[in-house]
Image 1: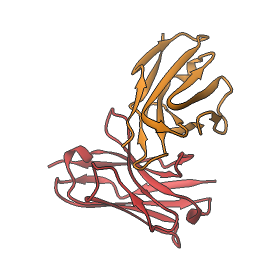
Image 2: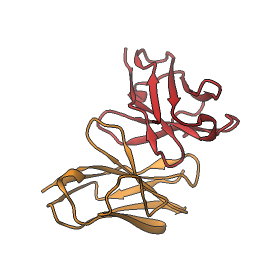
Image 3: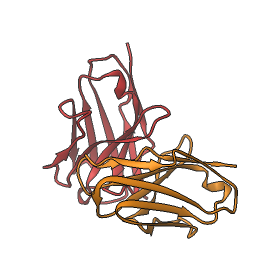
Length: 115
Length: 106
């Protein structure tokens, strides 16, 4: 059974950093592009970051470029999102997602940026 | 960035009706994916590559379209279909979502 389990969320002050993790199981992790998608409270979905199978290519929207870094450890079947210089508008549920048409989603982890 | 515009934003339908949700892209895309999200839950892949139903999706759902215009049709609507539906493109990075169509029961 495919599982994606996020961790690392919480309350953080503006300007600070936070690192999210996603533990993957039930499939060959190294074969898939992976991504992070977020959803602000009562809002729609926003693609945050994508990483290629080897980790050599990463993609970000302008809203997080230069502040967020996606990475992966294929040996550990794990995906990460390093978030720096956090802003209040980064407050959202963050989902770990598999593939370009996301066939599996994690349960999501809440990140709240507030003083 | 390819902007996806979904319409309507909210739609009310009665069980048994046929409904059509629309997604328009700011530039031509090869295909479109659709997701269903119910309140408090993670999204689920519903339609991929424009017209392919994901595993377990009932055949009352169908997707079509090309270029910049895509549709998700539900025929007939059932009470269990009440959710928000999002379109998404992966042709060009950054991958983007539409703003969603919330389907309500009339």
